[in-house]
Length: 342
Image (cartoon, rainbow, N blue to C red):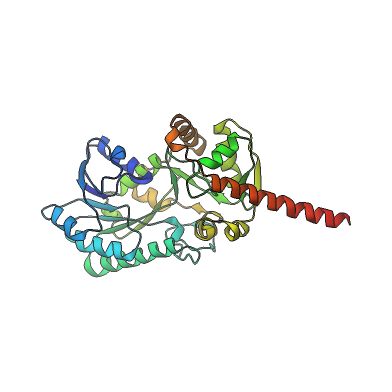
């Protein structure tokens, strides 16, 4: 198989790249070369900026691909460009959308690919929906061989997946746990969520590549495992070897007072319970099984982060914000108790 990845060094794509190369795929990676340390040995690197359409067009002028995947298309203009570049040059074009595009709030917590797409809270999700609409139109009217893939919360060994964290990543929350400080869990922590290790995601994704039954289809790829946010944070604390000290804060309160925009990532995504129906994926890729339970994956992630200081990026502003929010919650609780005694 000859495949072209636009991007190819991120959380999702790096795992796919690694597994494809192990299978002997002829894999081209088109990116600006800013993360050369993440490029897998054995791939054929094509250094270019995908936004420079003329240069990319010239670069691929005499090339044909079995599969083209764009991991960094976020707006309609991006997939319009991809259509111009790759129409007639690939047997399959895979667009990476997002499970956050599904109806929010959900009318049914069980999500299938037939669940309506609508997210009034998050522009990112609405942009992904618009990209899907455009590509489906090109499939219907011009035979552009698309497959739409919707990831949910996928993680790797470089970052701890969380519901509430700052602009600089999740390390500060882990640091608070290690120091015995309270950490914030949105809501009451009982909403349902799914975490997917990138190695599991890659197995499902590779099964869709070159799969004629996936043409014209939309498919989400996640783990089968469903956890509450309380369980997720407990598992992370256990991996760190500490006792969890959790403070539950309403999601609306967090979104209203945070310097980080939680209206999309929290209200439009993680604050909602999700349970994914994987029937379609398993019909298209019968061999797919997610084998990394969250406690197994997070143990690997924590061990890797603790062994690599470069992943331990501190965020003092977020740390102070956490203290302020927890103090405000405690003050409100204390004031109400005092009033009740009066």
